[in-house]
Image (cartoon, one colour):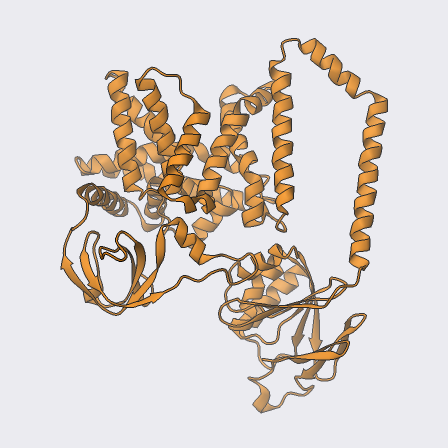
Length: 587
């Protein structure tokens, strides 16, 4: 991978002490430092231990690298190439095939759509534009950029169609071999291993005239995956992949039955039931890991799924034909490009639908467990209703349970629970707590969160990164309301990180100083503040704010009248006082 100042590669050691251990190699950008897959090199450098999580419940880079079986980073300025193509022949061939697919896609399609095709076919998102990735995430279509069960199904369907005139046994064997090759080409991504292993086990059962057993197949696929790398249990891609598949196995028939009952056509019911089944199972984990839920996933998936199938099949056919008849492949590429543009348009359109992505506080693990229990109980009731032989008797029992007296009892119980819960929450807020101050690692710049004894929140600055670091931190702290946001000054490394907070959380008041000049950062944030209609408090030397019973902030700077020499130094200096001590906040 090429970065601004370095080339980065994944290398496998051959020395006795670290044999077969993987590392990231970071080399200074020079012409003689460019490496190729399979190069045998001699390298000396500095070993860098991967960073652990920087903030509360933050991203842990060390744990992530463990899921990739990577031990850390080696930094060096120069490498010595000893030999070329010194790697397992099968790995070399699969890498050559992968590179050929990428090159053909880049030749026949524009950059925008070729990068998307590579992401869909191979799961490589490194070249896709950030805006497109964001649209796919917001529209709940990001699974299309990670090769999974749907992709494997289309591959199996395409191969089955091509080999339809041969014997079934031969077709199954050829399909298994192609799935194994596909795992090599996609670098054994966890979701690919799961999908391909399940496909291989099911096809293997058919070869030996056994009935396919989905629960056994998925369990065995997971066992093999974890034997290869136990740390993959923490990989979110693997978790979503397996949970989505389990959802389809458990709920698909019942949900399709319900859709058919409300007179939805069978083909549409098939498509919707698969989407609903997978999403129901992964939604609690999405809420836990990404602080978001979507209620428009069925719209985006219903519109995009047919085009995904066309893209998968037509994409592989076009690239295969390009090696033999390039002109014909070029014509097919026109249709393929149109199909990819439609996919991009669908993701962009559905990402703008209201409630396409709702941000929530990080739920408790107990809440997630209860959600899964509720889902499974409802599915069980639906199964009983669907398959109960004596349906009339079942309906009579249900009607007996839901008579007027029982309904009143249930409503009373619910009403009492709501009152008790609200009283508990109210009384808990009245309990005096200590003043809490958290210093947040936001990279360049700084950020401070203050929580008062009565749970008022004060956020001071947000760092430079306009990323999710600060937003995720606040949601993990179960904070969705900022009572006071204090922007010390409008240098990018202090204010840019606040943009996502203002856009996504409920910000009541923003404290700023009188501006000597209007910087680009100030103008950008001012537009967002005006659109959100947030109260702005402009402060000067001597202003006082009482934020809590025993907490006040006194503004020490800037002066009321800025002098010429102060034009580039108009940041806020404030003193926070609490009981017997005070804290000075300065630039």
